[in-house]
Image (spheres, rainbow, N blue to C red):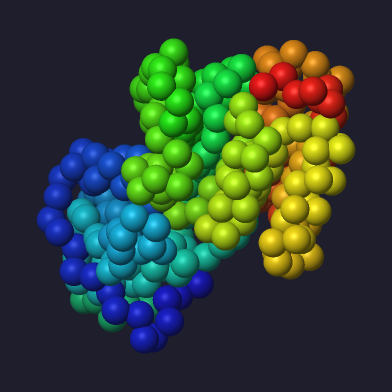
Length: 310
């Protein structure tokens, strides 16, 4: 696959292979998709050396933007070979996650690129996906059990609760950010990043706050919106959304009760059930499961007690 003819290819910043890896890691940690190209073999006379690396990423356009200009760091040898590799990288960057992320391609420098050196180069292309973000709204019994579990499972987790002392019980490190803020505060939005690639799970101590947070998450365009509660609470939530003018398609996006059916009763069990549904959603979204549709994970919801554990 090649990039569209109208694509503007960036001029790579010269960098050693270890600097390219640092740049790739920094981009992934801020939630960006990275395409990495590595020279794995050369045959005959070429400007490329095995081990050379080039990474491509879109610069952040804002806290919740889809990304700005293309940025390239490193080299795979320069000249026509680098231009062709960059075309492939742009196409890989713009492809859906389910298109597949790793392949090796051979380039014949003389026959296909018109380079006088005339050898050939083999390039490994890797599309590196950032950890999917999950906003956990509420640091009650379920929230403090769920957030670190999701972080251990490889999600990038933002836990928020504006109550005094609520998030201090948990702290934050690595993939988990704990904020003493309301769900709609700017610092929470900034920590989550683009909502179209994130999930929001609402597990607060208050039904009215649950309702407000779910409505807000729908309005922000989160890819997945879920709430913990009984089926009766779920019905009331959807009725209130309808009364506020939320359309049927948006109401149907709310997964509530949220979580796989494992007979969960305690906060930790409910956290496990919720984590299970999120793992299934991630596998379906990234196309890593042969058994789940891409649009959503087909899992039965959990039904906690009518008087929720929160």
